[in-house]
Length: 113
Length: 112
Image 1 (tube, one colour):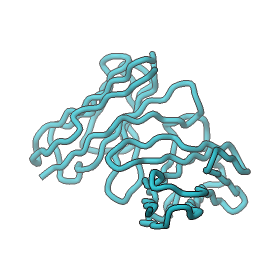
Image 2 (tube, rainbow over the protein chains, first blue to last red):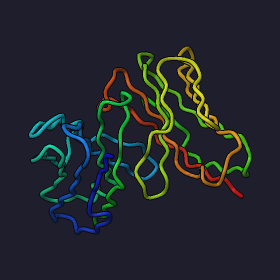
Image 3 (cartoon, chains in turn cyan, green):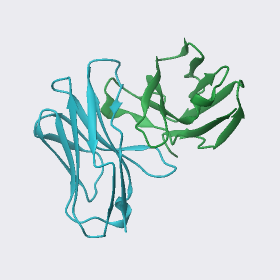
Image 4 (cartoon, each protein chain N blue to C red):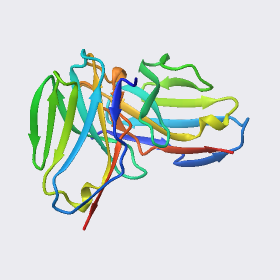
């Protein structure tokens, strides 16, 4: 069966510090991968998606970047965090099931102080 | 105007009640409609999926799409405390999760 792992689960970072969130998927090959952010009281905002190694699409201009160094690994990064980067970050993958069916990780809660 | 509007609640009902959750949308070209359930501090999971108009039933859950009114609903019958979660509607124009547009989510609590 397929599983998705995302870490760290929680982190508190000072403004201006770097960020690295990692996500790996097991049990499937060549998944589409996604990074979402969920701010309090708001819906899910798609940040990046990837259809293959090294292929990244950015949905919104921002302080963040994403990379896909391996087929089932997706990394979200920032060189210098802003207060506005605080939120709940979710990694997800989709395969060949229902169109629009996403399988989410447990999420990473980031607080920037 | 947001593409998808969803009342964030919170909504609190007694156990056994029928719950109605709703979303409205502005883009008449949306074709695929979904409901995701998100427990506290967890990632969302797909609950119901509907293509175009009509109803779809799965156990205690019924998803309804009215494209003429640009309105979708999720009904929960015989609600249970385990149904307490945030429910997010999502929809897209075409097949492909990268084009999903999510509502804000409605936080639901079922009181025993």
